[in-house]
Image 1 (tube, rainbow, N blue to C red):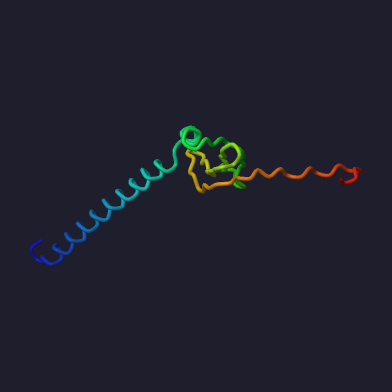
Image 2: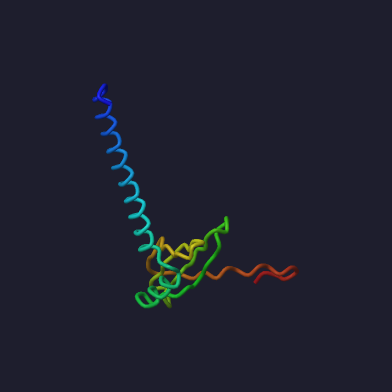
Length: 118
């Protein structure tokens, strides 16, 4: 070990740098996970909060093409406010958009064969 002291100093610095970056990576992943949990509560908790704070109720939903998530629209009566959330397979609901003046659109009826349009 005494033959190459510069090697061991460099090696020690590299080990310290590796330990530092490993610790920072773990911290960042943990912080991101904690932030996601705060922003993406369990669906029932989001549903309760939107009802209590904005008087919003579920008013529409659909399953994504891949089938791994659901999209749900919450709206207040009369559409004064609305929130759209994505619910993952883990049951967490992440709000992705919100706004005012929601308008429910009623899709047109499918034509009945042999019936004349009005």
